[in-house]
Image (tube, rainbow, N blue to C red; front, top):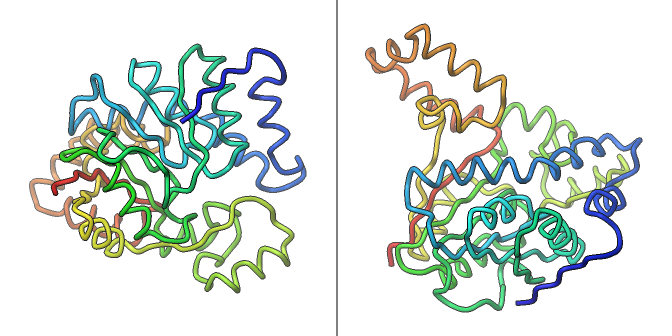
Length: 285
């Protein structure tokens, strides 16, 4: 692992702007806002994980750290954080951003399938918006199991390939129907549309993710809409957060629970409508 703090040179924002597509590209605003919102997402992840385990004194691996926002939030709260990404540009921007926030990050440039990190070292692995970009989901599950302590936790997100919202406009390129195409056709489609940015290897199914991680001793539990309805502060979208609060205030949530309809609606939403899934996993063996 290496730690580099650059005190001179370009700022995080300057380097981020250089890494983004041209301002005329449809992805420009999306990629920029996603990067800038990283620390805020880190706060939501912190709050979600706090429902499952104590975070005090934990060693954290931010696997596929991107521009470092999540790791920075955890480091601000006194945790030891290793930020790993296969893209050297991401790790460089993460270090400069951490320096601007006055926190310490350790970085590693490596793939998620072969990190080169110490076995059984981490209490917590965060793999956020990564799993669809790797060439082997099994390789990630195996590596996470190797570096994670027994009884350690993983926070994992994944997009829902069959969500109508993702079919209308996929979460990476904002193109209609691309999530349903085989990889070769999807790549050809991107070339035709002259879209630059993240390539997507595969959209794993809900069952696939649970089964693969289970085979390496990690039990994934879906953090679904029901958790968010009960805790509106954990909802990322301000619009949905207000809607959940409204439903609580009008006793609609209470009524749906009473007649046994809420769980059915939540399951339908999670499998067929939700744009993505959140999992909290625990290594049990």
